[in-house]
Each structure stands twice: as C-alpha cells, then as structure tokens.
Image (cartoon, rainbow, N blue to C red; front, top):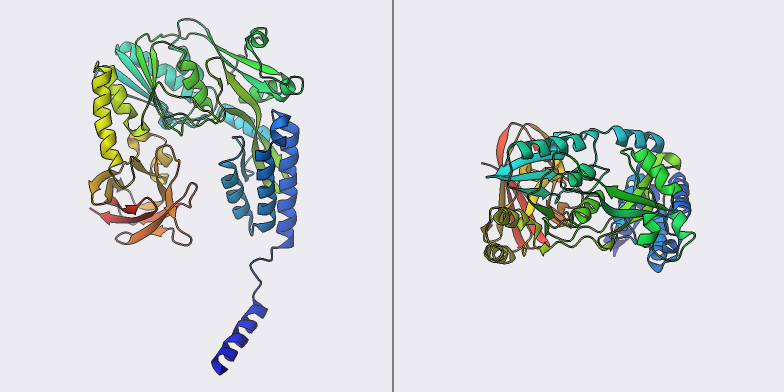
Length: 472
C-alpha cells in the first residue's frame, strides 16, 4: 500500500504540470470553427445541386465535420482528417489545403502550368504504339500529345494503346487525345450547373442540350466562370490532324478519374476503340478553388457532368468493354493489338490472373510510389513488386544519395502500405511493420551513397506486412 500511495502521489504531481491532451488551444478552436463554418456556407452557396446538400449522406458527413472541428488538436490533423472524411464523401472534388496562392492566382497558375516530360510518353511494341498520358493538365501536355500522334503517323503504327491507368484528371488535354481519332464531330456531354437545378427537377435531355452552343476554349479561368453562369455547358469535340484510323485500346484503372473519365467515356463512342481494365473512379465533377479565413483553401464542385454516351459518371464510373485487373490490362491489349484471337488472349490472361489470386495479396500488384519516381506518375518508371513465393514480394531499385519519402500501393491507390504512428523511418537492413490504410503516412528512407536496394515485403496476410530494405 505504501508503494501504491507513492505512485499515486507521483501521478498527481505529474498531472498538475501537464496539460491534458483533450484540452485544445482556444485560438485553434476558434480558427477551426470559423474555417468549418465558411466551408459549409460555400457548399450551401455554390454546390451544383441544392438538393444534394439536403441528403442524409451529406448531413451525416456534416456532423462528422463538426465533430472533427471540436476534436482536432492541430491544424495539420484537421486538414488530414477532413480530407480523409471526404475520400468517401457523398460527392467528389472536395479537398482542403493550406493556402499557397489565392484562388484567382490559382486559375492563372493552372492555365500556365507546365506538366513536364512525365506527363506523356510514347513507347512501342513492334508496330503497336503505346501512348501513356498521366495527367490532363499542362499547356505542354496537349502539345506533347500532338507530337506523339505525328510520330505515330510517321512510324506507321498499326494499332494504338492509350494508357490512362495512372491519370487522375486535370483540365483539357483529353480534347486532342480524342480529336486525333475522330473523323467527324461528336457530342461528348454536358456540364450541369446550379442554375439548371434551380429551375428544373430533372436532368437535361438531348433537346435541352442541342440548342446550346458548344463551349470552346482552353482556359480553366474562363471555364470556371462560364460553367457557373450558364445552366448547361455543352462539350462537342471535332477532328484533329494527323488522324489515326487503326484499332485503339484504352487502359483504365480505379485511379482513372475526372477529366480522364470524360476522355474514356468519349472514346467509348468510337467503334474502333476497346476499353480494357477496371471501372473508373466515378469522380466526374468540375471543381473550383475558394479562399478561406486563416490561410486555408478549399476545392469544391460547381458542376456535374452528363455523358451523351452513358449518362452521369459521378458515383458510377465508366465500365470497360473488357473488365480485368488493371495490372494485366497492358498485356491483354498488346496481345489483341498483335492479332492474337480474343479467346486465346483471354485464356492466357486468366492463367496470369489465377497465379495472382493464389498469392497472399489475392491479385493485387504493388509498386513503390514515392519522391524517387514522382509518386508513380509514369508507370513504366515505377518499380513493381514480383512475388517470389513463401509470402515474399521483391522489387529492386537503384537510388542516389538523398532523403526519400514513399509508400507501397497498387496502381489505383485503393489502399496503401505506409507508416505506423511514430515509425516512419525505414532503416536499411531492419524490418519495418507497415500500416495498410488509404491515406497512411509516408515512409522515410535516407540513402547515404548511391545503392542498388532490394525492397522486400514479408506478407503474412494483407493486414500484416513487414518491409525490409537491403543492399544488393
């Protein structure tokens, strides 16, 4: 009893000098409360369909936002948890961040953005061109697509594979990607704004859209303005030169989203196009940036999109013609492009799928995604894990001296393996237990000298995974 009394006294003394973690800084409470109220007001004012912010799904998430506002212990926690809530929100294109540039400046920034060489790449498999487009943003992206089609023409490609598995959207680069495959103009779809829903209780039909002049332009600034001022914004696409008239295969994954989904859906109208892979993300809205108090910024949806081909894409996605694991989509497309009969190509893919399904991760193919490869933006430069048996997956990477952040995930990022709390540093030669969770924290790796490293995963089951990084 004497020892217990001493322990109690020590705990009481410690408690007197330690601020309970549940007590939040009143200035932070005020800040987060003001920010949350501003977000809710903006959603009420600008959301494309007022009825959606009366739905149970939104009202339930609103309650969770208020709980987070009361419970968050830091600005960083608030932003991270807010975005985690909206990953499964009732509508997409909601994202909170700290302000880097004002919303008005953001429009100019996006209009003048240079995406760089990794945005577009062109590879070859015999006479089949493989065009990978990893973003729909960038002034240079549409130019790179045009140059790629010139090379496709000059080298007389017999067929074309367009890889959009790693494309999460952006702006208007999909327009030339589609245009070089068109013989005639096509109606792709229509953006529907709040002005429509304020005066109608149904989605627009063809006769509503046919009287609207098509929107033409490249500026996101003018698009954000026009799409809010007009009830309907019609998207009509015309042919570009040089024209490619061969067979086309388009690859998709669950990561294919937003403007990339618009592109896939429009391409699906063409008879010569076959869509292969996974149903796309179902995140097809137009968003706009809004500035918030205390130097926060929020992206919110201001218009929804209805396709002429398949109706509303938001929440549904675009279903491929041939639905298979995205990791095998390129193999199937290449076989078909090279003339392999469909039944024979599918039989081979089924064997590969069976092998994948017999691994501990049940068909999932993992990659090292991090600062060393621009977080997997270019798949061909992103290290892939190979199953070695006995629960071991390995990937070999050459890294220069430096500090890296990374996660391990499938291409579509439907989940990822990242750091457990306070265990984000990966030491070469040691084992690190990983956390499987969408939006987990980044792992960190320090490399002293340029090294060839083996990233080895020991998978007991999908939730129990250890990482070892070893010098080869």
